[in-house]
Length: 232
Ligand SMILES: [Zn+2]
Image (cartoon, rainbow, N blue to C red; front, side, top):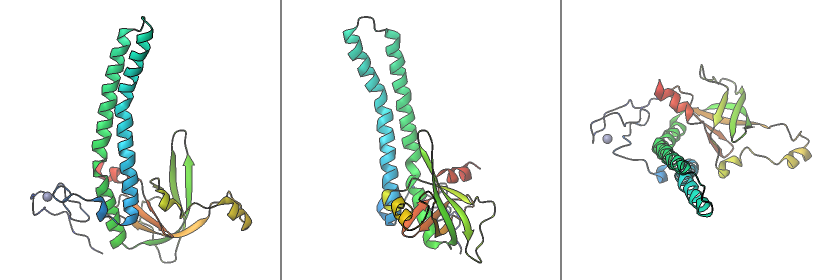
């Protein structure tokens, strides 16, 4: 298995936008969502929706608060003026933050493109895993815990046996969610999480980024795994 090294782009003659794995200059040849395999498109669409939703919420918070302020002060003569400046200042900060998230998530498609390449060209590890959802106060996190490997398989050194994955689109989640009633009638404890055999494809960047395939579901390790690599 060999991957092309980071190369100079023949068009812009630079290598800083060239993906180290696929050798593609993402500036001269931006990745289109429809180039990705269907399962990856589902992830990209749901991430894009999330991105614009976050932006819209962040950008609207300030104006909505200012509107409420004017609505309120129209009825009461005592509305403090300093408070209005506070709201305006707050709106600007929220707007700035939402623009920042929008810019930061711009290279989402590169990540999916890379992971799709990993899956199409990499050699998978056969492993038995348990899917786990850990609910927090405001959000929840999802993990695959590796319980055993198929004979002859080796797990990459230094990589945890617990892989955190992105929230799967509904089309993917079907592969690991199960009906507790059905489990009960099949003689299982509904609280037990089933152990499922699947394939794990690791990115050769040694960051621990991985694609997990179970039945016909596809799961992607969280983007933080990539961030660790790039900050090093
Ligand atoms: Zn280029």
